[in-house]
Amino acid sequence: MLDSVEIHYFAAARAAAGVGSESVTAATLGELLDDRAAHHRGTTDSGMSLREIFERCTFLVDGRNSDRATPLTGVTRVDVLPPFAGG
Image (tube, rainbow, N blue to C red):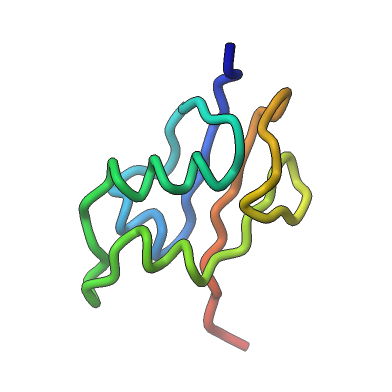
């Protein structure tokens, strides 16, 4: 049985997803991202899809920088952090 994970979207990812967070299940970060990209079909004001935004993001799994192969067993939170502009 897969654990439920709370995924939090920030900035452009939040705009494309249309929600700030949601609870989902997946075995790996890659599976989670593929599932959410297929589920959320919205875009940002500039027309970027969630899938396109994911290609540019950093992902924190329970606070640790992670890649698509990261297992989600026992994980409670995934943060989706697009590149931020500013100085």
